[in-house]
Length: 506
Ligand code: ZN
Figure (cartoon, rainbow, N blue to C red):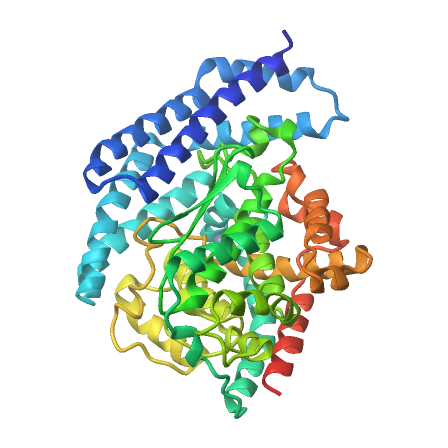
């Protein structure tokens, strides 16, 4: 047997372990009774260390070294497979086991402390844990290595190729476009009607409607399912089983609706990966020990946001689907028309809470978090000064001051879970989404007409061909350049926001 074949068989088994971790994770977040938490934690830890042992063990290293001598220069899949495995092996060699263990322990403890601190709106309770978390993440950055800024090493876990410098450039372009737009919206007199969104919408009907839209987009339910969870997510155990969740509020229709469309976007990506990449290093994040078919967090997010926002919050979409929604809820929506509904679900309103933000203000929430993370990591911002810095940025970007730490600096779980460098992928995703959508409109004949007619196959086919089927074979930059002819570019995104909200807010 060739060394490459030996290596791919080992990679397939590691991929099986990572997918099993995902099954247990899905269960813990949708079905498991609270009593199962402790032993489930142990099961997950055992499987993670098994995957880690396989990745760092002698058999895999030996096969990797032989395969590196053996493979031909022309085969991209083979080359990229070896590259992914090599990167993971080298990464684990650089990480001191004591640091990894300390981080894992601190994550568990500090999430509990964060919950308590948020309940009491008391930052001082969480501050010492955050201090340690920042310190350990700085050590992590040193161990992983970086060229310019410690944040580069953390960003690379989620968005390979992204750096602090590129991010700051991206942010300054975005702010130059978004802040004046927001100012114009705030000074316009338009106040779209929204009263009907909070009427009584029974959960079973919401679910039926969401599923109909999901299937319309092309979500294959013979390889998927929709469940309920406290926080919506998508998770896959190979392309053959890609699951999503949503949450319902009987008195707020948009929550489950757009939550579902968002997760469907993630799911289409995973279901669209080429079958031959199943159980390979190109549908697993070996460095993060996570089973995922998408090229990066930002690229994945570009797909959820493309389907949720660029398609699902468009005027054409609601002209097409509002009559169906109204048919399902004749009493609740009897006095509303498609245009009124479209305006309601696109209302811009600066708020303190990121997860409730509209398309215009969403990136401001992300940028200020990323800017604070940068300061914490390079030491220019002290943890003790964080609440004040947080409030100052909310005032600067959105003209709002949080009344307490719970709605301010304590609102997101990310920092207590040790996630530094993941927030920016949401904004990178927004920017990429518009870039891909613009390219699709140029390259697919009559795409606009197809979308207006509720035919989503042409768009999905283009995305599958250009993005989904490749899994992790190409980097995010390569996928962008191959599909759109350009590297990351904010222009299509800013043009989209200007067009849409210029029209909505006159
Ligand atoms: Zn998402």
